[in-house]
Image 1 (cartoon, one colour):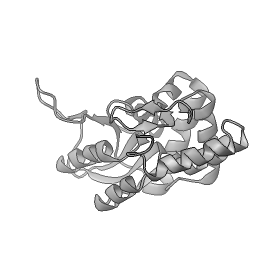
Image 2 (tube, rainbow, N blue to C red):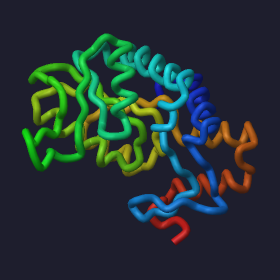
Image 3 (spheres, rainbow, N blue to C red):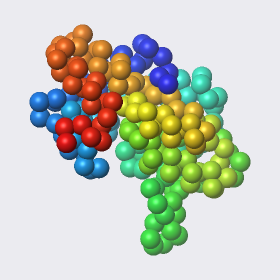
Image 4 (cartoon, rainbow, N blue to C red):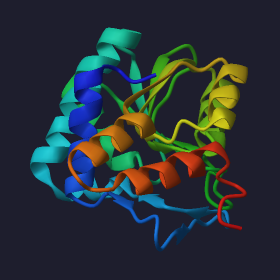
Length: 213
């Protein structure tokens, strides 16, 4: 699922350095879904650090072309992946569109913003994969518009089984710069967390919806 091991380790380290990923098993976060979690991820923060956003842009651009072939269009999932998607599209010299969770209630009632033609090859850029539901809604909208979705590239995934099942069912090839396993190994090696905290983080990933309830 990751593009490659070296990129996964470097990405995880950079996200930890800027606190885009926070690990706090002792005082868990509460997600919008109501899940309790010892980890919180906000990859939009990387846009505020030029060297890191350039690294992410370059790794996405190189690996997207290698894994999926150069597409006709890059699509970002609103709102978290719009900025990252634009950087990638600019680097590859490609058009960019973004996809809303649902059509606007006014105006032209667009769900896809930008110029997209039926039959064009599209790679979708996403900042974070949890269950994959919102990301796959974007894929569905693009397909309904006649796009040929070559795959999705995301900064980070928690690697939930439900996400793997959802992407397989939707027949979408997902590749990420980094993932949960790489993050945990690095966090222990770099003393961000203890071995005891590692166990807690591993247990959470097994059943995130019922953990600490």
